[in-house]
Image (cartoon, rainbow, N blue to C red):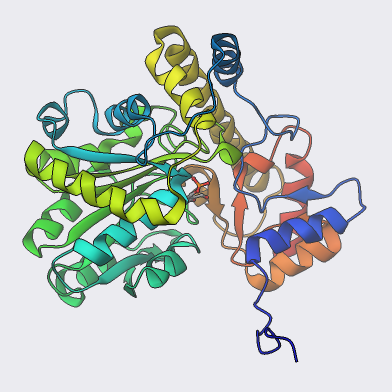
Length: 403
Ligand code: PLP
């Protein structure tokens, strides 16, 4: 008998399954709203012009293929941290932010969870918003955390359930629990707290001694402004929280497959930072020795070159604005043109790549079978999958499904 005869078949990844069904569909009207990657107005993957320029600069400079250090390309992490915390950040100026390059946002989360599992001096309990990005659960669980939820989304209003969030953090979460916060453009709901609500969450974390662990996978992608999208992170830091932060350059630079990210921790002072740095290396070395160089070089070329940086800011804004336009158009077609039953204001008020439409599982199944429109079973759509050529067909299909 085979050594692996007792290995059970696992369930397929729910999001990749959507793409497979889409690929198998031969209808020319088909639309894939499952994937979390930006598409241009022709429905095509988009390589940013600033990325192309950075690559030609790198090509001309004929870099070698030597290994990076364990924590990656130091210039890149320095600039990534500056982008997130802001150039005026007190711990940044004090030299007390410990940072490492990571295998995109997923790798940052995994390093962070592993570091906390080993060094966080309290119970290893993490509170995730309900719902959250599906991968958060196994990342923390596989790192040895007990995973619990805090209230986040209100399916009736399709907005934030701030009362439940506050009640859970104030009364349910034991002191010193780790709280995962989506810094902006919450996935999968597209619902973010307001700046005032963030300030309250910061106060609650302080009062209840909760540890804020930020996942920032969409800086710039939500509002079009990298500093506006960093509000929550910068506010918490300004209030003295020693946050953990995961950054991804997958979406905002379109570097998905290059796997560019960073993990950072605010420490008390440079001496403590040096100790944390040494332990990050000890965590990373047996995982993958050192990160890939090419993507970090691209990102750093953009972050460190004034002209490319300005172009990047324009291009992120362009992506965010195209998505916001699709939200407005979809809302208008459903509400004004088709007079589709229901309230669709959430399509406009939600932010970032995704929208929680409120469509029920049976409706998503019917949309796939009858209209060739694919989305995840929770009714989440990637706004980036909509464009001038397919938005009317999509709206009509939704109209047909809810009527
Ligand atoms: N965190 C959230 C909330 C995400 O939506 C994603 C990507 O979809 C990630 C992290 C990590 O993505 P990546 O590993 O591609 O940077």
